[in-house]
Structures are given as C-alpha cells and as structure tokens.
Amino acid sequence: MTRNADAAEIVRGRRADRDVRARERRALTLMARCAAVVCGACGRTLAADEPVWMGRLYIEDSYGCAPTCGACARDRRWLPPEDCGGCGRMVTYPAARRTRLGAFCSSRCQSRWYNRRRRGGRESRIVSTRCISCGGTFEARRTEARTCSPACRQRTYRTRMREALRTSGRSSLEPAPKPSPVPTACTEAEQHALTIRRSDSLDEKE
Image (cartoon, rainbow, N blue to C red; front, side):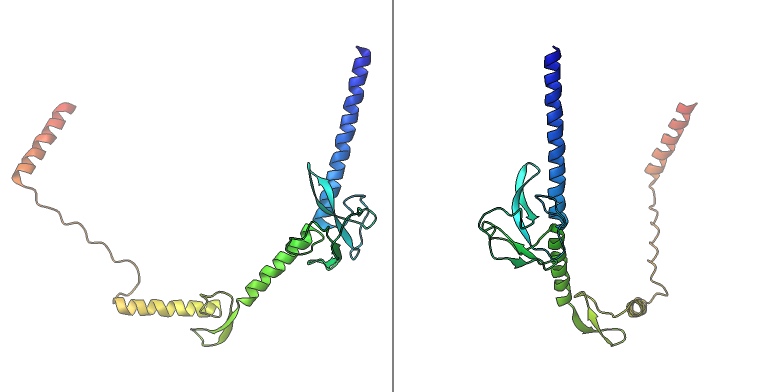
C-alpha cells in the first residue's frame, strides 16, 4: 500500500507540474497575441520595430497564430512580409493564411486599425451646410443637423413655439382642460330602484 501511495503521489505531482507549465505557456501565448511584446514561443521580449512571424502555436486546447521571433519561426512556406496596419512593423504570415483583411502583429493593432477606419468613415460623411437660425455655414456631422450651435437650436425652438401659440390662439401651450361630463337625468323608475336598494343595504347592516 505504501508503494502504491507513493506512486500515486508522484503521478499527481507530475500532473500538477504539467498543468502549471500549460497555464504558463497559455498565458505567454495570449500575451503575445494581445500586444506582441514577447515571442509567443520562447517568451523573449520583442523590440517595437522587430519583425515578427505569425507562427502556428497551441492556444487553449486549439491551434492559432501568434507572433514569434525569427529564431522560433519554423521551417515552412512563408508569404512576403507586409507592414502591420497598426504599428507598421514587418509581419510575415504562413502561405496558408492568404485570406485575411490585412496584416496585424497583434489584436491591439487590429483594433487600432478598425477604429481608424471607422473614424475615417465618419469624417467622410461630414458635409458643409447652412444654419437655419443665424445663416452661417457649419460642418454637419449628422444628416439631420440644421443648426450650428445649442444657442441657435434653442432660438429655433422658441420661434417654433411662438408660431404654434399664434396659430392656436392660446396664451400658453398647456393642454386645454377637458370638459366635465354632463350628468344624465335619471328616470323616476331608476330613482325608485336606487331608493329600494339603499334601504335593503341599511336593513342588512342592522
């Protein structure tokens, strides 16, 4: 029993060490994919302008591309190097990764490129139009913009309210009071039935 217990303890220790190494390797690879500050294979710190190779590494129970240094780049077919869309460093992809939107060394650079493209799309929609309040020209960032400033927007609103008051003939824009309901005249038969019902209710209480 003692020998079996020692063997089981050794197996558990090896499994724990293997799990620790797997977690460290996964954290290193994810850090490399996020910011490309370290090599995803050996963990060496990468310079800001150092070229990277998007190697195929084991990440969280699956394989994926992560930036690696030139020493860790495996002997395989590579595409010509391209400039990263976020930071401008040289990025080399394997020949199998031909279909992609662009070259990025990390997810941070990819997000930076997307944000820059989105801002460029918004700026392209800016048009020059004339303010309906003061008559000046301004750059409208929305298609429904009609005034150049909050002051002009408030002035336009007050003008529109004054026009509405003049056309309605009222002194204010508060809703008109609702007419009170006209009481309907009760017939003699209904009054007699109501009197009998009240007397019955009083008898029950007594």
